[in-house]
Length: 76
Image 1: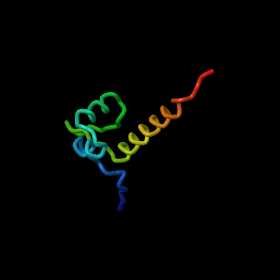
Image 2: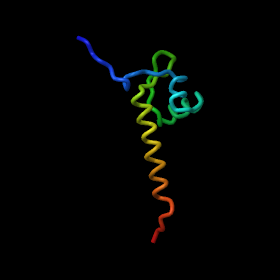
Image 3: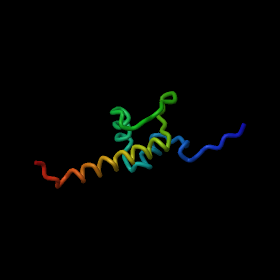
């Protein structure tokens, strides 16, 4: 049975995830520890599905947009 994988099924290591997010490896580990970034541990190595990195970026964009929409509003 042949299964076709999408690009979102691609696994990245910590260095590749850091490059994708334009962050340091230390930042990646902090995001993993805080639960903000989904990771999977294979042996001693963390790996990340590309789809999870995209989801993280989208969540950060949504949070930024929510903060921007909340700013400048007057409360009664």
